[in-house]
Image 1 (cartoon, one colour):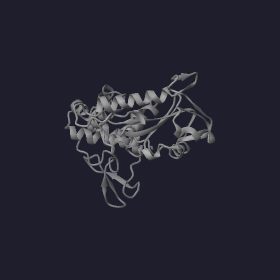
Image 2 (cartoon, one colour):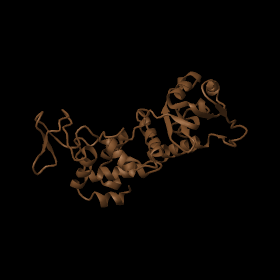
Image 3 (cartoon, rainbow, N blue to C red):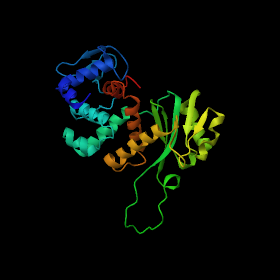
Image 4 (cartoon, one colour):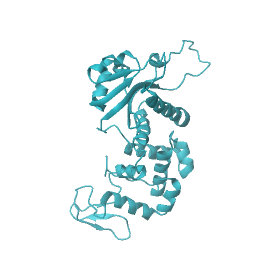
Length: 291
């Protein structure tokens, strides 16, 4: 759903609330505090009174919209902007587009990313799966006092991220410590995220992947010789890394280690649900209806 469709489908605050109630309750409102279905509407308000625990509530209780003072149409517009921005969108750009303060836009964006979290997904990857690692971080400023040669790749001080992607399918990516970039740590990630009985794993020749053939079929590509050898390549995961880095460098400019997993989840989420009604899915997850 793009922003034009949001304006057409949700022109007023009541239209937005009706949609949220339909998604969360489907005509059967229940109390989010005690779970009782004994609730009656409060006159002249889009709230309900629970006759069991004697509290009042709205559809936003316990959701990313709880206690918000921002119009729900702006929430829906921000959600649409984030979902449709292939390379991501900065908080300042969201603030300009929906006319809110940049701090409010950042807060809304992080709430929406909470609904886009992929960390709890237990679906295993299968088929032809490519696996690779990359390093996220900014380049040192020119003209500094430190003239030490800058290392690239595995010798850098940047934050390592390990990713796995089905050929033409879903992707999983995770921030890891450098101490996990060994055979034991990478094998643990493979067992956690990949169906060992129905997968062919493709990696480069990094020594951390050397023992993978003991768990599942494993093929490697030597990037010093070529980047593609028939079906043996890691181009899919490399393309995902390119998109992720364009977003972080070109849109967000700077991402802290604390919030980096949320931004990585954002890119994984768009990739994994690109064939679905991603707007409806995100609102459902924001309301706790789907996970």
